Image (cartoon, rainbow, N blue to C red; front, side, top):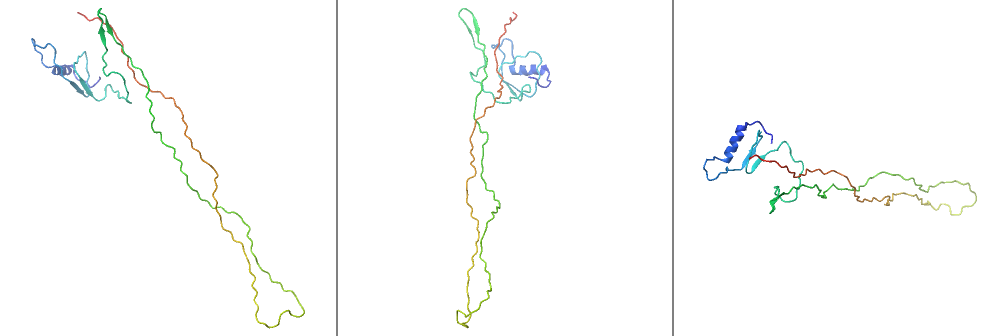
Length: 204
């Protein structure tokens, strides 16, 4: 981890405080270990050995995970080694494979709304009406009715045609909506780990 400049002496004092005092002749030859919590930037120069759990807060190395990664398998990351009866030591090396979990989520919805639009429309139509005319025809001879019988009224009915709109609905079009399935190709990126090994000889 790269963090702000802190002298190595401070780190050594911090490690000494974690391990506790050790006196010669103590029944326990191992250093005492306590959980080490690091909060904030720290720079370590030189080899440092820390025994016990270490808790850090904040981003490490400026890297923040962009998406959750699901790892399957045992929680322990330690390599499994075994010694055969003939003295042969076997060490398991593991690797991780990348696969994809598919999930169906909502992608919105198609909404179809039917509404009414009104417009004025005119249709020409021929209408009939009755009128009257008066003609005066010269005549001579004897009258057909007695003279002086009083007033005489003749009513002649007249007719006219009227028009009123009649609206009849009819189907002009049918809207059909169907769902289709389309496919897209996307890359799913994940970081996988592989265990490797190296053999070194330690000095006496």
